[in-house]
Image (cartoon, rainbow, N blue to C red):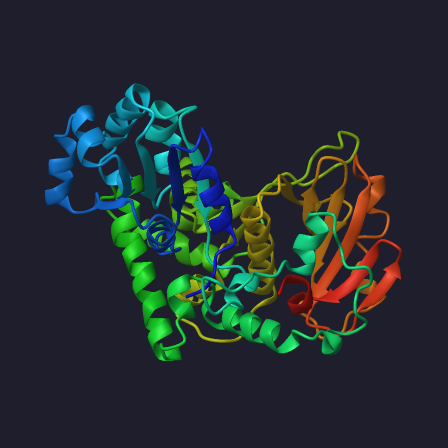
Length: 415
């Protein structure tokens, strides 16, 4: 079992006055149930997904909830959304009961939770494992901050090692990275007792389950075929600009339908849409967002391929890892990509309150100064200074191109 960085935060929230109701949401199979049952063993576990029991829970009055289930975990609560109103009633009448609500769709957040539990709950998102979490072997093992997370916390290393070969934890980091490249970071495929073939089979079943079950929480599809085609199209084109009108023309659907489908991918935690940075009114900037799948294992399953990454897939898996690492330590940051009409491109801008981090991603084994060309002079476009700019690649050597631009091995930096 891998340790989860978010665990301490969940426990801390549960002891606060505002933490009487905690909502854990995220994609199916990201470990929400396992985490909740591990952290709250004295809570009654109720599966709302069971239609027989769901009908029974729906008949309980608020007073019965207080008496029968004063502390409970309600799993897949979006299956019985009116239960949220019952929990709200218990919350408003008594201060003793506490509940953990689990849901595998942001629809839970977007509708009933915001409607009924606004100001009454803490919402926490659970993502697939990060690389530092993948390195752990038990719940009790300490999770190290990656070099990137140290930068976010403003406690960077005093000096970056000149080579990944000098990193004392190189083998651990490399093993976690290789696992991430092959099968992604869902907790189930981190089980070392499973063969590689069993992990691939799990991923294929996950994709099938997503289509057959998760989408039913989002929409009533008469025909899944257009959505499946778009799923494959976006997997092939991960890491590229999203032009809904162009995709619609290609697939024979309306632009609004494509936009709605892409939104489904977002709210079911399958992909992130990275907006274009556009805060300089005097500069002509591209405005289309970029799509990035959130898990490389899922991309491989959708495309039915094994091994061998494209440059765009490499970019997406790095950005997905960065996104997860930001989320798991609770840092408030805005993520963008940047593209100007005169050809300057930056894969990732991370906006902090007073500055930016910039990230270029290269799949090369050998970084040169030419790879830093889009980072040089970038501050002239932005409205805040750049604290550091990173070129992340497979090159094991660390190279400084000026005082703010450093090229570093991606595994050493994120592992």
